[in-house]
Image 1 (cartoon, rainbow, N blue to C red):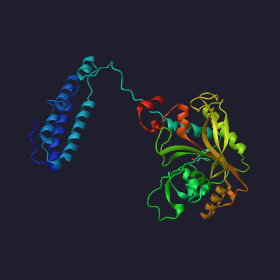
Image 2 (tube, rainbow, N blue to C red):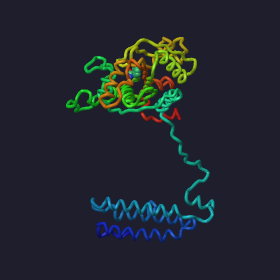
Image 3 (cartoon, helix red, strand yellow):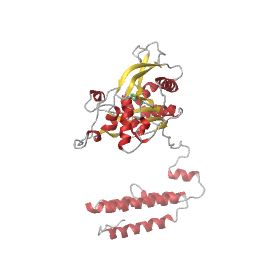
Image 4 (tube, rainbow, N blue to C red):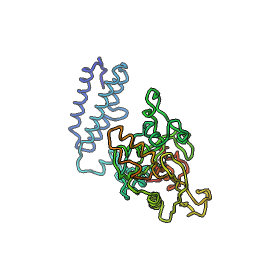
Length: 371
Ligand code: PHE
């Protein structure tokens, strides 16, 4: 029997639980047979007549609201003490009977812990980054909350220019008091890290920039307001469009297989000139035309181009502003190329995933397929 508590203040509770703990400890000294352990377990933890249950009935159930927490903490500790005492008990050489008494079936398969695997998006991102690491590129990253200057202005999107409409931007609230260039937004692409890298480092530069980007896009089978890109930037003397073509052609073969071919289409980005969209021959039909490539034989995969001199000028100006040598990014002396690709799109093509939302659903039936 557990006597009712006459007071619920902390010291009364301490005293009451200390007495129980002493009892557990002295019972715990006689647990050297499996039978004794089972008897101890029933005596303390038994669902119907166990002492712990009795404590709960006598004390917890009748506790005033403010005593429930201090009581509960001590109750849980007592339970842990009982369990620890039981777990620490060693019995005489394991008799098969002892196991049976404790309800353990040694013939059951174990509870394995399955190792985790990388999420397919991360795995794809690492694969892309890995291709460029083998070419001697290093990895740079930057913030997702970015300033207007890095996300747009330095990349040759002037304020209010319609080119900004191509990237539905999520703005951070309450920025109106700041000068335009310092206003915060969620970066719409990884390209601002190009600027950050050039302001901080001197050429030659060969970097890849993986990361999360944000756009005010409605979610559908191929769009998500948050997605991922891998950006690339190469700056040195005498970098040409041939270097760009050779690099990306190699990268696409490394990612999708050596029979893949590439073609470059004129395109437009404010921060590259000339700009191109890159297509690869359809990896599903080899180029003869199928549903996946909409019977064109080609799949569009990334944007790229030669770094626009206006970008080098913006970098030079910013370097001057922060007290660094601006001349090393003189567009008359250096040149470079940049590219950017969507990680989700590549992962969808590589794994035949039809709905981008599956990547973020957390649905194990989807994720386990990559294990
Ligand atoms: N930042 C561009 C986009 O998100 C992609 C790009 C990167 C294009 C680098 C050219 C060079 O659409």
